[in-house]
Image (cartoon, rainbow, N blue to C red; front, side, top):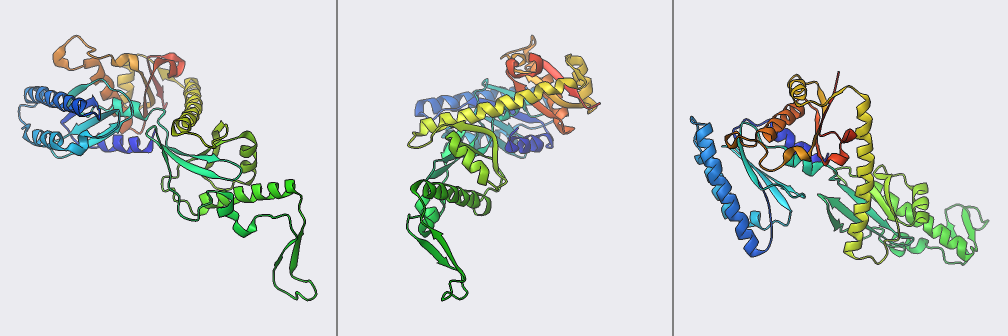
Length: 371
């Protein structure tokens, strides 16, 4: 799960309700933005009715003030993300941008509706992708499923000449003075004449060492995000030999040349890395089946209340729009699953909302027990 989503979930589960949660898909075209605003306003009206019925001793005024502020905030409506989850209390508003499509909906409850945030975090990896050629490199940040080129500082080893400069091999007799008595030849290091292939090999190794050193010692990576390679197999092998920076990982890789690719092709490469990470993660889920588990809702609810659940898996088939027979219960099954998820998170467990094919043993509900 993405660190940012862990932080959001931790913050939300520590706040006292009641909450008004509004989720909707968002757009950027002018006419569609207006439709989003109308939908948001209509949800707010319905939420007010439900709030006043459910919380007769509290005022909706602080909630309405925050809703009106959002409706008037043009920057809020011009975001390019696929959807948004808005969590409103009488004291605060938490806006969480999502990269997934959601069911347009609202909830009024003692708890925030968490499951969309959880689902958004699934397979939503943050990392750097190093597009590496023999004599050049570019770095991309992948975050919330968006791929963005990183602007590197002047002097960064973006190409061979910048990285090595005068240290490039030239095929001539090269030497460097290292002090000592040069009249006798002591302290002088002779490099000799290199063949063209040897020169290329030396420059190749030296360049990758420069790239690795930059990533390890100069590149700012405050979130300690992993760095995966987009490179030809021979370049992967060579870089792996010299790589010493702790951010580099060979857990996922794109085995192709990144030279002269369009942004769309770079994004396709990032998707391949994400798919490899997803496959690895879902494989780890199935290994959890070796532990004690339960798969009946009533048992899971009790175990979550007692803090016994370490991992809780919910298949999206449980979250069909309008699920439940009683409209006044407001999506009763969703709210029950949300309550269980809240208890699991508060007890330091992990919650997953997955397509059924990705769930352990393809179960629709599953809880892994601590003991």
